[in-house]
Length: 159
Ligand code: PNS
Image 1 (cartoon, rainbow, N blue to C red):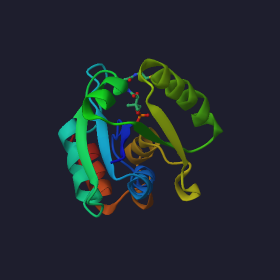
Image 2 (image 1 turned 90 degrees about the vertical axis):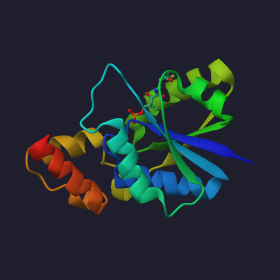
Image 3 (image 1 turned 90 degrees about the horizontal axis):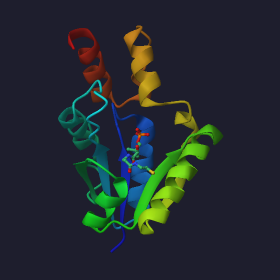
Image 4 (image 1 turned 135 degrees about the horizontal axis):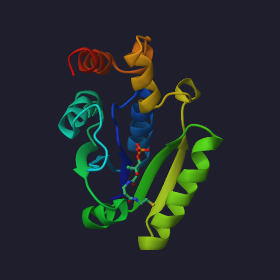
């Protein structure tokens, strides 16, 4: 059985993330979306909230499951029996760092990384830009599933 991971911060997930997750689900028997728990960086959404948002939008893919991880991604992959990492590439600017991480990860345990070119509709979308625009009152609703934009609005107004 082929088992891949879509790792990330997902703070919050965007339609770009979901596009990559759905396409990965078409390529692998099983896909785990793994949310990084980073004790050094407090996000806008808690890990549980991110998992909840992902749960609400990935149910359409029965072979996709969710998890959170701490530490090295390669250790998580080894423990879970995952042989491939799937990453979306939005632009050439993503590629330099992603290539470096892919090569480092491969050198550590032999795990491979597959890059999926992001759907051009979402090539300018990132979680950090979405948060920044929303915080200053911009409309990011077209870039997020409906339940995410209402959750983001609630976060910004009530914390
Ligand atoms: O959504 P992000 O923040 O771009 O995701 C980055 C992520 C979580 C995939 C990356 O930071 C990661 O793999 N972190 C885990 C720690 C690790 O393995 N670091 C070494 C990478 S070579």
